[in-house]
Image (cartoon, rainbow over all chains, first blue to last red; front, side):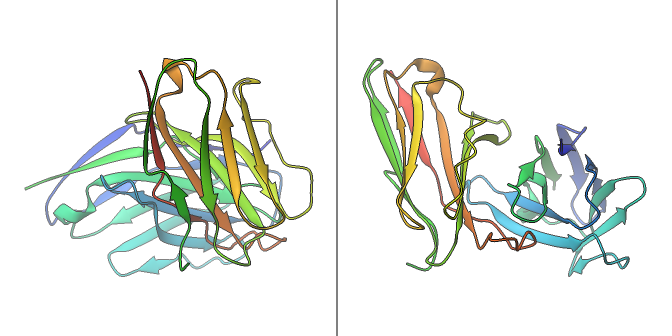
Length: 113
Length: 116
C-alpha cells in the first residue's frame, strides 16, 4: 500500500533564511505524482508545487523547489528567502492513476521575524 | 461556482444529534474526497468517490459516518448520533480524476463541526 511520511511535526526558520521540509513515500508504481500543499491559518489548502515521477528534473516555483530522489523515494521541499506569509502547515501528497490522494501528517512551519 | 463549496462553514450541534455536511465540487471533477482534520493535526482520509465506481469507504471511522454522492455532483457527509470526538474540520476536495492522477486536488474551506 502507498504511504506518505513526514517525520518533522514542526520546523522553524528565520525570515529570509532557507528551510527544507522532508517527505518520504512508499509505492510499487513507476508512474505517479507528488505534491506539496500549504494550509495557512485560514485553512484553505493551496497547491505549492507538483512533481511528475517520470521527470528527472526537480520542479521549481519561484522560491519553492523540490529535491526529488526517486530511488530513495524522497521528496523534500525547499523554501528559499522565507517570508512571514510562508508560515503554515505543509502537507506532502501522492497520487497515481485513479487512486486516491495520500497525504502525509503535515509539518507546521514557523517563520521567525 | 469557480471552486469547491462547502456548507455550512460552521456547525455547532448537541451530542447525539445527526448532522449533514454538504460539498459542491468543481463542475466536471469526477473525483471527490472527504477528510477530517482535528485541531492542529493532519488530514484523516474518510471516503473517496471516483466517477461511477464504488466509493472507497475505508477511512470511515464508524458506522455512524456515511456519505453519498449523486453522479458527479453534490456530496453529503452524514454523521449520526454525534459524539464529542467528532469535533473537527471536515474538508472536501475534488479533482479531475479519471486516471489523470497528476491533477491538482482543489479543496473547499471546510466545515468546522463542534459537538457540545
